[in-house]
Amino acid sequence: MKTIKNILITLVAFSTFAFTSLGNTEELITGFKTGNAALIANQINGNASISLNGINNMYSKAQAELVLKDFFEKNSVKSFTILHQGESKDGAQYLMGSLVNVNGTHRVYAYFKKVGDQTFIKELRIE
Image (cartoon, rainbow, N blue to C red; front, side, top):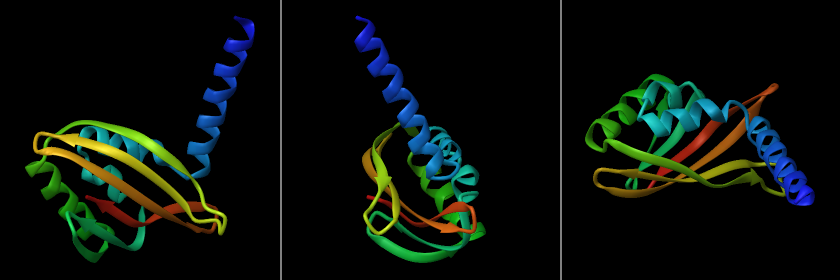
């Protein structure tokens, strides 16, 4: 029993470390869970590639917020779950999740780029 408890504590600690290494993902996750476009757009520095249901464009932070706000107004969020997150061999960081809304389920992919000591969304896909 003690071993299981130690393993669970280690897993929770590792998960927390992994999320902080991706920057401010808590704000991003909260944005998806609540349908708050501003919280998600705050994770963009400069321009980001955003793909919504197969339509892909480059958007500034302000434009991204408007596009995401429109998406969430049409697709009221029920839940958001992280499926996987990590870092590739070449150092690219990513997060994959499942967004459930009134119109169905969408896969969410976020790719991050490090700028100085901070990490920002470079590409966001909601499919």
